[in-house]
Image 1 (cartoon, rainbow, N blue to C red):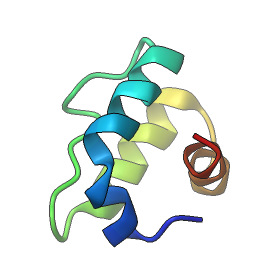
Image 2 (cartoon, rainbow, N blue to C red; image 1 turned 90 degrees about the vertical axis):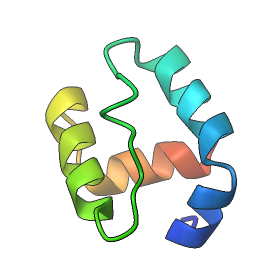
Image 3 (cartoon, rainbow, N blue to C red; image 1 turned 45 degrees about the vertical axis):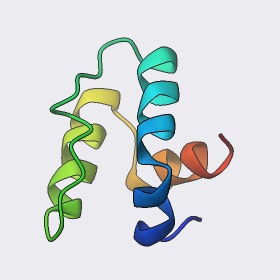
Image 4 (cartoon, helix red, strand yellow; image 1 turned 135 degrees about the vertical axis):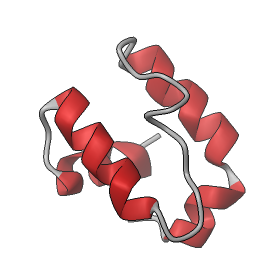
Length: 62
């Protein structure tokens, strides 16, 4: 699993790949702000119907 710092470094690229794979995701769903990472994970879990671990695994495989 990538750390939050690693995610932030490549987030625009990762965000684009997530939006390609899951067309229902919006820029607001993928907004990664300092101190609000848990909110983003919650939005992704609700939209995708997957656990945080499943989403993190998918992201690490990108």
